[in-house]
Image (cartoon, rainbow, N blue to C red):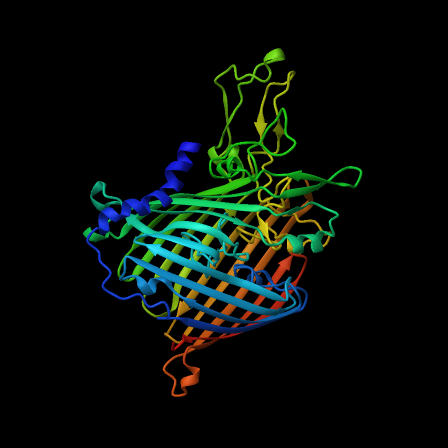
Length: 529
């Protein structure tokens, strides 16, 4: 396992140094201008719902959203894209994005605050920044299962090879990109308010993410086909988790913050607080294997992709050791025997794009299945029963930490029911075993107008620990259109856009019938500094 992670993720921090090989002749011919191409965004949004904000009016907005019947924000951002310095060996970028809200978990939201430095192909980012998800259509997909766009950015130090770099082997057919990051969660006070400190919460939790992707293609020989494969992983570690005991008290379980603990987050190892005979890998570790096969022609793009989520080693490799001895040898590995799990729990998608302006340009279909989770049985080997079965993976949840969530929104795919829907004060993903079908349609008939439509059907079983008595179902819909003012004779309208959306949920998973509308007015432009 460690070899795989080293090969796919550490390369993202090593390769930028090697990238100098391909850019040894590049010189800075343009003077650095830190105030050049500084852009601004002014945006206001309001949502009005009959019960709570429907799913697709709330989800995949980088956490800048709310379930309240009426919610709104006014947002102002200033940023300098690092691409401004693409003609130089090195460049800088920065951004500050602030929102004043009504009906949100915070009155004032510092959505983004970051600075970036690029040297050749390598980039260093410090702060909180909205990062795109990989391999999926941002507007039409349900979202990524590991590194999604459903929650507020986490402040972090991130070293990345953000764009594919062509390796100096295989005649230009092999390309690499990835990242490595450490940060800290910022929702501690929200957790205190939401739980009242009467159910599991965690303070001062640290965050680690990594990803590595390989692409097989060659644009220089005009090959329209490409194959991308990679791995995304997230670890929550350190901090102090507070776990409720049978007598109602909260037991603190402190995670490590020594250098070794940071290494265990990078290369899974160690154990959690309080573990003795049976030891898990330290922290809440999860991730996805990902792949995408794409045909990208002059007029059309067609792609199929897969996202295989895992919560521990049993679902990461579909394999678990099961060769322990009996009696006095019950803790010893005496046999070469392994348990092979079923190949389930996938997100599989199809995407089509027609490139010229048209009323219908994009089509996305996705199927998600998460009901298996290595099976319904978990049994650690004992001196009387040697069998070891590592099932009941409990996706997005953890027995010490508050799981794969931030500010109540899941950090991955929003079809996993986010904790903010809970009415019992528990930070818990209450529906992580489900099956779903999703369709997304979109078009841009002109440079002024675009639209999208989302429709999702979901069947939920709850969790293994707390299953629903009956299957729950849900249908979520969204219809949205945007109009941009371009080249208008009234100059103050240039760069302005209006987006109007209507959404609805039907079914028990999200709490009955939800319906609502949302309007967003935005103005983008260039600051003349």
